[in-house]
Length: 106
Image (cartoon, rainbow, N blue to C red; front, side, top):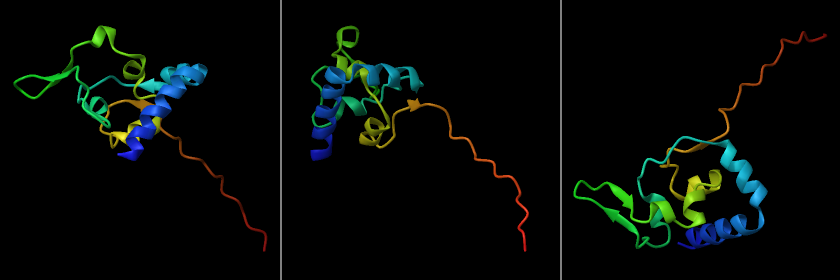
């Protein structure tokens, strides 16, 4: 629970004081929200999160949601807070470093 509280404070501070970082991360963010609601239940359940009869989640204030909600996830640290259950990713897949064959001199 402590990690979730730290994450909420971290996101707030990033949005207030590291706006360039958040903007760059938004450009690097790929994917779209799968509406799992995991980010809406970090530390406490958001009062605006509703579930329908089939168990699907919906934000009742989606068009007017706070900046912290719209920006989630800011980076992979945010994804770790929801156990990477989010469908967003950042950047491209890492490339494999090619190493040329080197002849040893013996």
